[in-house]
Length: 287
View 1: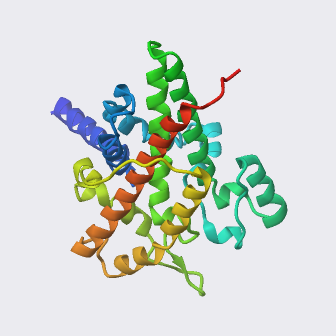
View 2: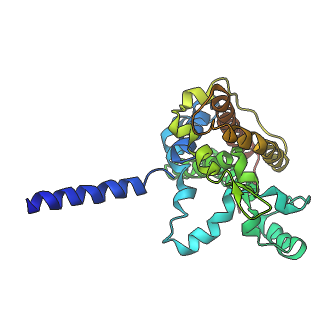
View 3: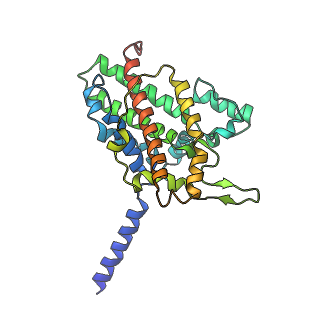
């Protein structure tokens, strides 16, 4: 009986650990968006990248893994990469240069912590450029077996941030409820309800990718920021549907809305992957 009790206790602990490790979109949403983008890559993209959907999906969750509470240095440097609270820019635009200029602007002009405003567009741009440089290396040394690995890592990392950009609540100070004049918060928990929607409702890469086609982007910085503005414009729709209970008990309208956001994220991912490949052809030598 003692052994049985210990066994039952151990199982209870194990179940608790598994629940605590459940995908915190959640990882399944990020994976589906990345896999959907990979499924629509055109034939002129290297074969290893087109066949790398499972790897790209896995790597697309890494930026959330980097927020592990025991990774004290990494967690702090990573947290601002996942959002941009657009209201905190006070009508201004972040500079089209680099994150350090943005941080300087936040501190000196806006008098705010840049990590609180968010640095999502720079996370997208930096990982887009990492992938572009890695694709250049593949063009110059196609037999080098190290290069495909880093292309997949950088491509997957990029897919996380493009997926974040498509989630409207990653663009607003009202990311998890709307603050009320009396100090309360209305619709607390909305972030989790929307984040988990694709995974809970079985969105598949096949459903997300249907009809998507890759296109090369002209000005990537402008495109990314226009995408974020469009995503921010969907915040009200998130709250309206949630107020109706449609994020808890899905309706045709809420399902179509979240599917459209996943498709937008997959399209942005696909276009940036493709643009990185196209631009890599004319990059100057590294050295």
